[in-house]
Image (tube, rainbow, N blue to C red; front, side, top):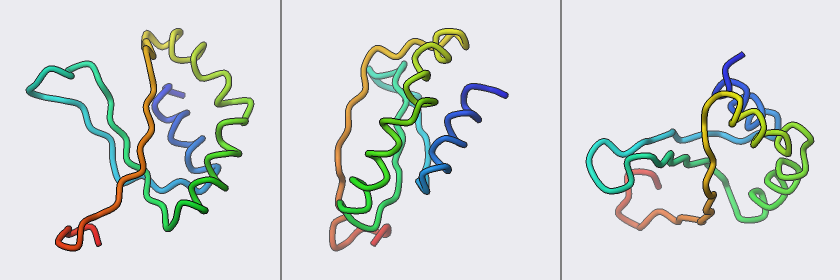
Length: 89
């Protein structure tokens, strides 16, 4: 199983719904991977993400990523809220 499919299954295990994955085609951040997960509330995020972060498979992710030839330099996390004029509302 590919590393990417393995990660997707891990997200699904905790009920995470992905909006999508993006990379930069033009710009300075051309080695970054952006992921947006959909949540109904911050409480839902806290509940699901807490279990995810402590999952033994997730704790093994850096080793699996290195084995797949991927390097994880850093992870940042933000909670985004759609504006009143967003199509995502």
